[in-house]
Image 1 (cartoon, rainbow, N blue to C red):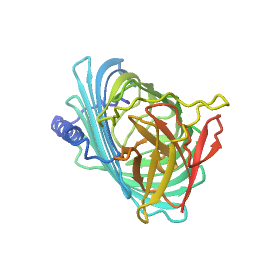
Image 2 (cartoon, helix red, strand yellow):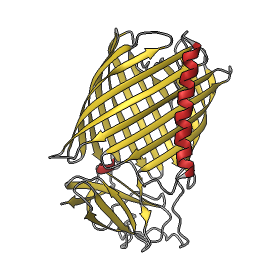
Image 3 (cartoon, helix red, strand yellow):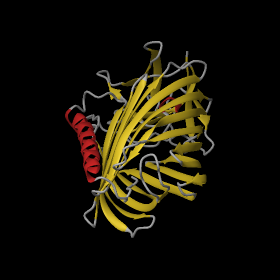
Image 4 (cartoon, rainbow, N blue to C red):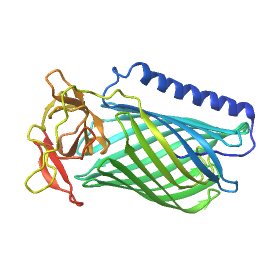
Length: 396
């Protein structure tokens, strides 16, 4: 959870409108998940983070703040939607609010290539004197590899500050490479951005690893070749630990650079929060079995944890898993960018999900009731680079 603000003079009326838009978007996403949790597909996810932060913006004294961060994600076969908001209440009584909505469309994969287009709209405000608006469009070309992916992206749009009557043009380009090594995911990104008369370059690497129940993520990056946007090293780290069916503890901290597009200045922060998952957990009255331990002393999947698949259409594949009695079954694979996706339990006791998966060789892992990630039967097990296993399967 990253607190951001821009304490610069501007029109208070525009800041009020920004707060109103952000509050409405967050309220709509919250209500949608609260009143219709059973209608949303497994690819939908919503959380609310409630916590406290110690923030020090460059050039200002440190300050503590109470934070609320709702997030909504939905992934479909040809589209995705993300909505996110942040509210900070500082010890001085000042408030900071940010909100953004991102919609994406994907083409049908062809020979490991896929085209993606997205639109982003957002606003931010600080106290009664600073606000930003931005509207962006992005076009990406994605190439899937055996263990990762490569993106080429171009971004264009406008950003508007405070009471200014003229918006500033935004142009940016970037290249990103993702590599999966067992339970470790690496993402390298390099980009160049032009915002009016401001320009800068960033290069960084993000590492994400699931260690038992804890999700760890670390970013190390640098800004250089900059005019008006600062320069130097920055980085952030976070850890997420489930503490129940619908709660997780989140600890994060670090330093981030200024963002001329979205209107934040550089700062440092340390934050601790509780994350509430709005989806109702899938439950079973049957007892949860003990993990099966193989003769080699490692946790092997029980024999009944078997994967089968069937193509539902030219664009989608149905994955079905037979598992021991469980309350929650999740999968993660190269077709989900290694993000966990919850399955739904059928009347016959199996767990199923329909996802857009291209023809070819894919990798995945299975997690039952928040336990260790394992390779299910029905897949070919490969040893990961860090001693774990990854299950591979072929989609015809």
